[in-house]
Image 1 (tube, rainbow, N blue to C red):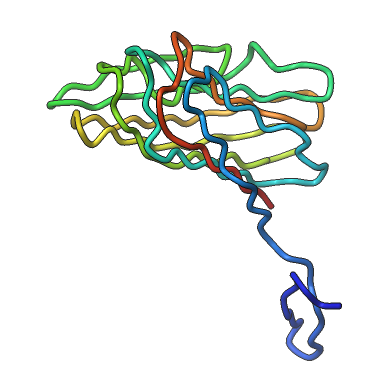
Image 2: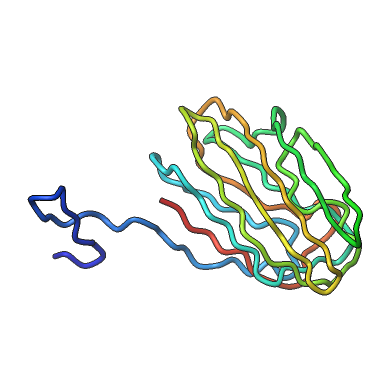
Length: 174
């Protein structure tokens, strides 16, 4: 059948194409230090992560680490994270992961935002993210890239210094 497909055309002939975006269930991160997404299929070129009211049990950094079938990549990330609060900017360059939220000032605060990963060539991935902490007037941005050297098969979002105490992380790709 044609369930889950969409109609496409080249301008003259219409045909059924495969569904574009795969949306997986959100992971509840309450009481977890890590949200891990495994089994990313070959050929994926764009990944979306959505933070929904994620809070943590301590003032900390939130990172994203990419992995292949053999291991997680723990070096070579060329990225910069910036935080804006009350007229002041702060920055961080971790090198071992993408830093999404840096030096988060308060525990138990709900953060929301979007992370976009794009495969730009062979096994090179670029990241762009923005996260807000509305309650405390913070805005976090990150951009950068990393060469995995092999096909991306997994990724994890990590609270570096404690547990998440609330929230969900959504995952979709195409």
